[in-house]
Length: 173
Image (tube, rainbow, N blue to C red; front, side, top):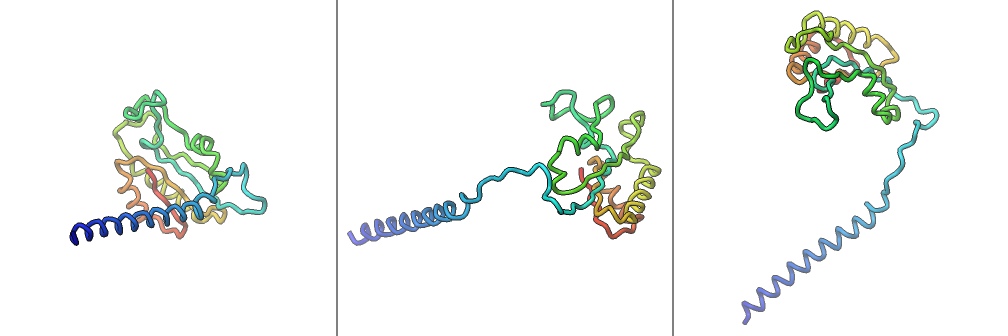
């Protein structure tokens, strides 16, 4: 009987501990999480707020492609498929205007370039030269370079070797 009593006592203690944990969690949610209600995103940044100027530079790749149909997520990119201009990204993401003043630059390969040609050295040098110019521009606070997946690491490494700037440059695929 003593063992049975001990087992039931241990089970009751475990249940009480679990119940107290759930009660504590409930109090936490009710006290801290629920008052944080969703707020509307303002249409414009508050007056007097100076937003950083970010240059969005597109070098092409899958990120600059779209499917022939809206829900086609497996067959996009490549020759003959519609491309997304960098200006369209900014237009399609109006909330960006709340965080930064975004301008775009298009360094994608020409439409008649071979599909598997990748990035050429002249294109890399043109981008490196432009990054250096943007670094000298006091109105630019940062640069985002969108790039395809296949050779992004090599391009970022090349830019690290030849570009000497202090401003943040982010490569994104």
